[in-house]
Length: 510
Image 1 (tube, rainbow, N blue to C red):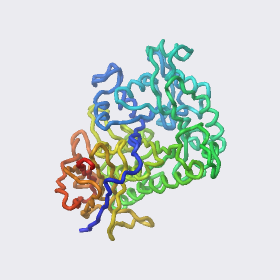
Image 2 (cartoon, helix red, strand yellow):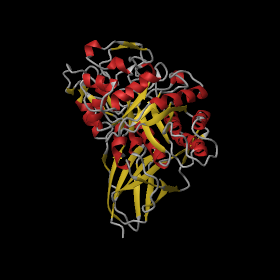
Image 3 (cartoon, rainbow, N blue to C red):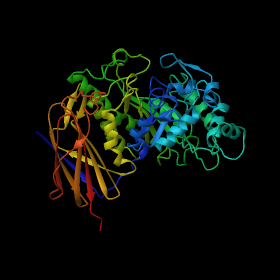
Image 4 (cartoon, one colour):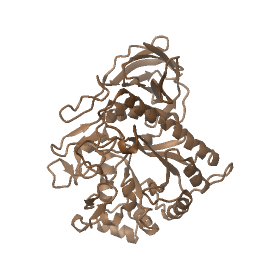
């Protein structure tokens, strides 16, 4: 059995892990909104204002910190005034990006804000740059966040909402290099500065304006946007036009035309998927390095507001709805991402899984026939890791000679790990990415005394195992016996293709 050592200095705290790294994304795409979050007030499914209550309950257990809406590509064809007022009066539209289906606009601004309030999540609203106007976006900010008296305030009150909402996060378009307008980086940078200028702070609502950033490793796009607010080697602060800058990265096992199956894959495809997932760390580091040249004090946050696995759709489903199953493999993709997020918490301030319900790497799947709900293996990783939210990161030094798995021209670590500390407790996350071999990891815990240990384990006999309405707990966390700490050492044996968390209660310092 491979044996590794993980050295963790429990008293050497690193950057805080922003809770918003555990954010979510809900687009008008397939059955994410309609049939997922929203079933309508006349549905037999228990709901409040049409919002499905069992979905809300499941997500509240994750401490979901924020929700991004209405897109995605949909954001740049969405006109928000079509989604307010009496539902029967709202105009219909065609969702040209996703399935070419008709939208009735019954889920709009008020419904989204009600959903965020029910979830206890901060709203992240993505505005329309591609087909919208500066005035349209400025009016939306005013409608949502202004109190007192103004045209948009009066309109909001006429639609039943007296008090302004708090909206901290505001996206200035989406994927402007593609579905958001097919713009050049230079053209979008000019549009960004113009739109951001008219997205006003109203009262005590301070917008965190988020620029639509790069795809994958397009570092030139990132540099162009940073040049719009700073200069190379500047000692002054960047111009306060936008506060966050995104990039998008999806884990796609095969070529775009044949991405691969979510549930039927061989060993090579499994390792390829995990190696591509692990590449996210390279991309975070690359975009961060570019930003450091123009913003050495890290005033602008890096945001990965679309990430996750993207496979071929499930057979028999609408190809424009992006519905896919979710296996133990996906859980490990998520755990690898979070470990990378934690290591880059000095620059990375938000991330949003794509997507929350019924689309791509979802937390929740709902059956359109039986209306049953199941949570996915990825959901369990979010839940097991929630103790990292707003905790101080701890460096994990993995030592040993056999931690590499060769995958084509890339190397994949057999074990992925991260750790944090908060309120007298440390949380260590460990993933064994080897398909067939267990591994023993000895936690070498230094700097603090451990008073109590507990563990949880997520795995399944087969890595393609997934949850269905007939077997909702085929992949579910279980208690994990990890023994006791002796002389600061805690041996942990991880089964093949598994994810584990180890929680340590620490004695008071001093």
